[in-house]
Length: 159
Image (cartoon, rainbow, N blue to C red; front, side, top):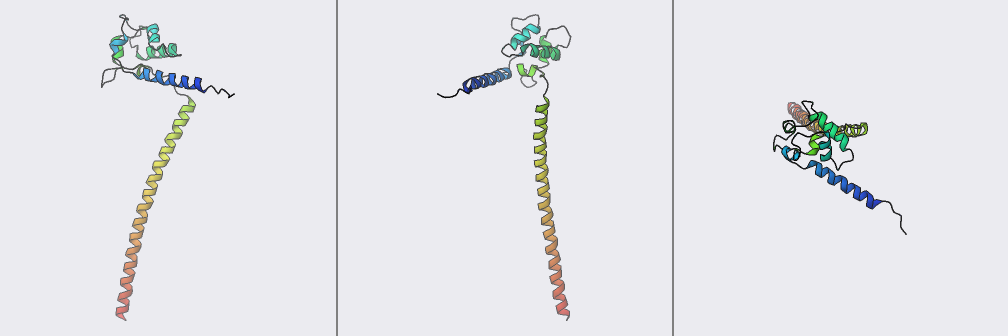
């Protein structure tokens, strides 16, 4: 008998997470979000939009805080149109959510990656500068040696 490591459950959870992310990225017209909500989207209606997510209540609060410009506790169509993309006039549920903030570990990891990229770029520039300097030095040495050879030949002629 084999040991159950729970890989099947882990795979299902991973698949559901990816599907939720794709669902959150799907582009829709802002008017479609108001289907059945003629008075605007209140916090409960927004929470229903994010219903598949465990933290839908928190997301709904953030969305309402971010996009409710007149402070009436509801999102109107003109307010959501401000969130629409300029290229296709559509929104995604993910683009409405300003996010829960960033963890310190994520920030540190991103800074580490940026540091690696900067180090790589600086290393490339440094290596190119060394190669160019070596070419210039070689050209000067060659020029110096040519002058010395000419000077040596002229001295021999003078004797």
